[in-house]
Image (cartoon, rainbow, N blue to C red; front, top):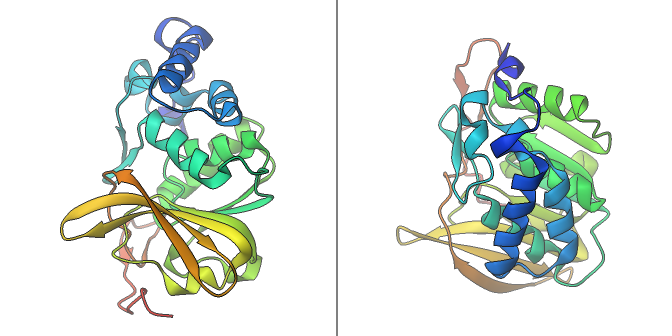
Length: 241
């Protein structure tokens, strides 16, 4: 069972709360200022979201593999994306996350107080995330196995959205699921380079702010099933409205 690979050992040494606290101090030194983000990340046991063999590196400033060609983003990038969502405002009540992955960021969003709706295209990752978040006691999260490029219209509207994979442009269907005054944080790839950006939506137009360079896996359409591991690709142009 995939969940059995998660670190379950006592929280000592490199996976102790003290080590987590040092990560938070490093994030603050690296420019993360929102205390709500720092407090939330101090409460989430990041080592539980990686394989046990990698648990000792969970709080290092690196991304780590989680299987299926995916990674858990380095702590600073998670913190920066959370700050971009907040930007000295109230915590968004409902947040759509596209790309659950390890579910670490899902947990951070929940610790911030948001109700989180998260979509993952890779079935085994979604299954693992569901089991882990349940064991850790997160009840205000809703996970779905599916193609997140079209959002989650049945659960819209959302106060904020965050995409955890690089896209070539803003996804038109997503803005229609975003409340006026909401924000969309995502990595965008242009000319072979990626940058993180936040788009503030006023109900008809988006004001885009670049937040610096980044590196994410690309956003793919289609799904990978739990049972077979085979890809059920969707060949439509998901960038179009």
